[in-house]
Image 1: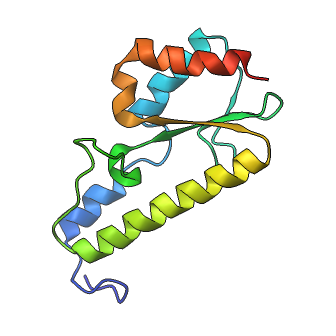
Image 2: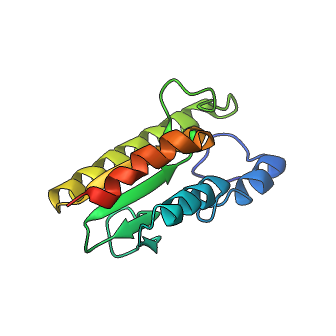
Length: 141
């Protein structure tokens, strides 16, 4: 398969793998949701009306939570932040655009008066620490 946007032919196995990557309802998101419910936080999921479509948001309390995958959003220093060797320049540009978009959306939300929390996929393992971080939303504003 050949795509004019990519300098190298697309590997069909890689294409199939990437097609299976979920955008919403990931394991990390589900675990964050469990902690938020345990804390009694009220929220909406995947709020398209806000910049960046936050994974969780409470507009009246003015907070949002993004659950970022370490690979896609480039969690600095994380073992999951790998870079594919095949078509490396494409991936580097893609990751750069993801980071730029994340930063821009966070900045816009903060200007709108929202508290923005970013939870990394690898941080979900430590439930106690995650609960402590998200508990701050209960008392915010």
